[in-house]
Image (cartoon, rainbow, N blue to C red; front, top):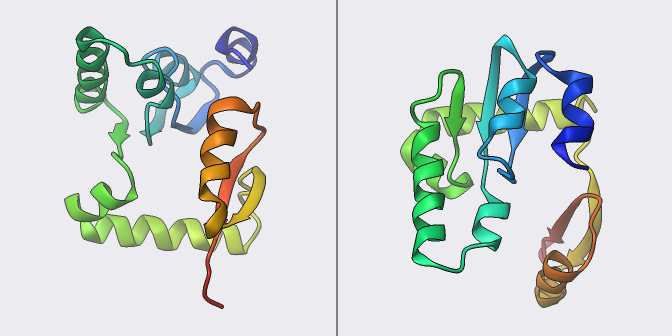
Length: 142
């Protein structure tokens, strides 16, 4: 779904947007926010996937850096990096998300669950297959 299709339906109506794709430099999710809405940037998969030249790498760095100057915006460079940057906020956010999940307030779309031994399959799916959700690697210990 391209932003041209969904943005007119929700422009300035979203309180919290989470973007892990960055297909347009986070422009469309910011336009979807209410005046006091917040944008959480959790990645730049479209930017990273399309990096081929030095200029592409520079664009990725510049895009991430620009999020630090946007009001009502936070960039998580991944769960690991967030944990090291602000451990208290990381624990609070993680606990809050788990509470929402337990109460069925949020339902992340799951494309497929795979055992850890099939991680190469996950890479193939990410590169080649149209997905309608996340790929979850199941723990190997029960």
